[in-house]
Amino acid sequence: MKIIFKTTVEQPITRVWEQFDSQLLTQLSPPFPFPPVKIISFGRNLGEKVTLELDFFIKRQIWVSKITDFYLTVDEIYFIDEGEQLPFFLSYWKHKHRIIKNGQGSEIIDEIEFRTPTILTDYIFYPILYLQFLYRKPIYKKFFKNLIPPKS
Image 1 (cartoon, rainbow, N blue to C red):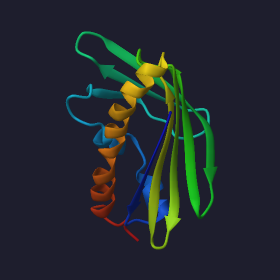
Image 2: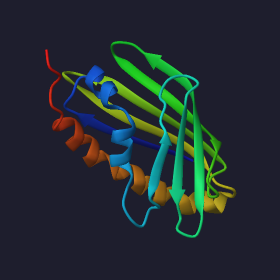
Image 3: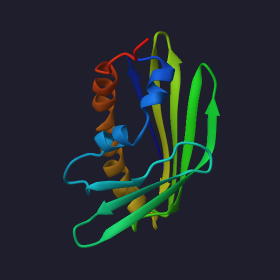
């Protein structure tokens, strides 16, 4: 299944890229009823890994994704993370994080492909993942609107 979200922000592409880090990822994690997420490692360059710990209270799950592609131009930056070790509810994960120049600002695009163990659970988890990424839109807007400009 696929989910795509586009969010326009008021920062140039290079400034958005500079701030695409574990601090931003922490802010993007939704509150209850979603499981609390602890960032163990965060990479965004080719070959690096993102490791998360999801706390389901009864059991903790480790989620490891590897950065399998990276692209950088003046008009677009993206990296792709693909699941290597996934939580119980996923059998496939691919997330393309794109930042595209949009006038004086940028557009952040989350392109997610996922599968669960069955087609039925794909349809059950679709709205859950959809809401999780919908939650990011206002956070992206607020986070990048309130950035203090870099010192010259």
